[in-house]
Image 1 (cartoon, rainbow, N blue to C red):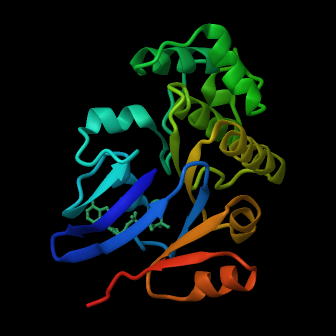
Image 2: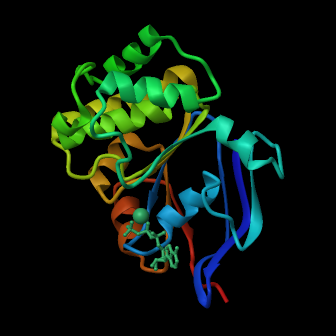
Length: 227
Ligand SMILES: Nc1ncnc2c1ncn2[C@@H]1O[C@H](COP(=O)(O)OP(=O)(O)OP(=O)(O)O)[C@@H](O)[C@H]1O
Ligand SMILES: [Mg+2]
């Protein structure tokens, strides 16, 4: 499904990702962990075609060298920062982003998508939503075009346990019933162990690897410096 080969990213002299390799199968929920600054968001930005790698390749659905526009049709991306129109209602945000999407959705379908995530505030302005509701809306927007693969960058930061569980349940549901493939960044190890089938760890500090391995998780470590 997602195949990453010798992918590197430098910002000037700074090596953020160094020749990383991994593969994710269809329907897997894979956690992406590592300390602050390890390069997790950078990796997701490259896979979401927001940034360009310095070298190396990745392919989705065995299609190497796809154009960014083709890749974007297959992916949903939830950024680390919430990106919504604060003065628009949930409905207006959903219909606005539906117009930007390459797939057409009816109002009813958009509403059902929000409801599936327990976001029942269709006519409420975004500025009146709680942090957790905004996160759910951000996620619903990323799913408008029904992408087979979803990249999520810390989608549950600062939200209560109930909303966290609703989001985890929804993601598990779409992975198991709709075969969605999910790459999920989080610093919450409980969330990772309960939701993810496997973990990718970036960086040379074994801190996360040790915790997750002790919990019985299958951890793949991507070293930053293997020179
Ligand atoms: N546009 C940029 N220009 C220069 N350096 C950058 C840029 N974007 C990220 N970096 C650097 O790349 C490194 C990796 O950043 P990144 O945001 O990917 O880390 P992260 O693992 O997502 O961290 P966090 O857990 O804090 O979100 C950091 O040292 C950061 O300062
Ligand atoms: Mg980040």
